Amino acid sequence: MIATSTKHIQSEYDVVVVGGGPAGMAAALGAKEAGSDRVLMVDREKEAGGILLQCIHPGFGLQHFKEELTGPEYAQRFLEQVLEKDIDLACDAYVLDIDKDKRVKLMSGSEGVKVISTKATVLAMGARERTRGAIRTPGRRPSGVLTAGLAQKFVNMLGQLPGHRAVLLGSGDIGLIMARRLTLEGVAVAGVFELMPFANGLNRNIVQCLHDYDIPLHLSTTVVDIQGRDRVEKVTVAPVDEHLTPMMEKSWDIECDTLLLSIGLIPENELSHQLQLRIDPVTRGPVVNSMMETSMDGVFACGNVAHIHDLVDFVSQESLLAGRNAGWYVTQNRPPADNIRLIPGENVAYCVPHTISSDRNHTVYMRVRRPMQDCVLRLSDVYEKKIRYAFPAEMVNLKVRPKILENFHGDTLRVDIVPQEQA
Image (tube, rainbow, N blue to C red):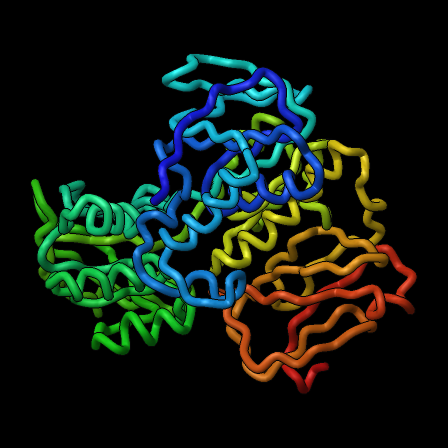
């Protein structure tokens, strides 16, 4: 990675971006492009780049850069642009609070506690992994139980293996990638166990990380006990019924010394809660309009803070939009307000953004609740689009253009994804 050093932090900025991962870097660039003179990006780690730095596998950048990159390569390209645009970067710094006047209080090892005045703020803090406590897995509490992301950091950045024989609970993308990574490093992976009847990772990762390495995937199965006093010695797994209740009479033991958890991500929204932003109970992120502006004037959100993404390219796309709108907010050049609210309908868990304008182009991201094949994405009675497959693990995105809505005169638009025979 190219070197990044903390610059002297000024007392006033046009835009402050909280987070230096893929969302933060893209948002900072967007704000600069939109005309903001003074932009500060704050990251709590010693080096910007976020989770990308430990993702040494390829598969990044196909959408944004039109070529396949590793995580560090993707991060470096953005970080080079951040430094070229003369965006101030404060690493090893932590944002403690943002008040109603958008003053940012941050703590830095080099500058202590400092309060910064800003005209607009972009929240881009990313997400954290769910841990064992989130799903209340029974059993002892020996060492050897860790999240897949932490194991990835151990292996890829610290050169340490978490164990010799591993079981994975959950089929999220980080877990699937770690199943392959551990196998390549000589760790025996006994299997991936997923509570739901469908996988929660991208289909390409199911194929490339499990099928290609003969790692079994057990759907509708979960870990019901962890055994071992000082170190994990075995786990007990059991299939679940249609109510997700384990069928203990069909359980079996698997000897292992490591249990990796890949059971979902939680948006890092402590600052959003402090600001009392309106939160979507499904995404667990702030409600945002088509400018990625939250319920508080001049506060924007993007990336995994707003909703969990499956591709970093989509994070960058969305965050550039948030940054540009923060820049336009500062220069008082913002577009007209939205006039249509999106309503998630059949088999649609959520839509982001939550509102759109009939006068501009938009990209709307959504997730389905259950897998569906040969289906139709429908916007009320004004638009339909055939989709071959829809999976909960993969975001569906739709380009909404003014032409689609030229004959629509309401203020709410229902979004459904239904089988073709119902359309």
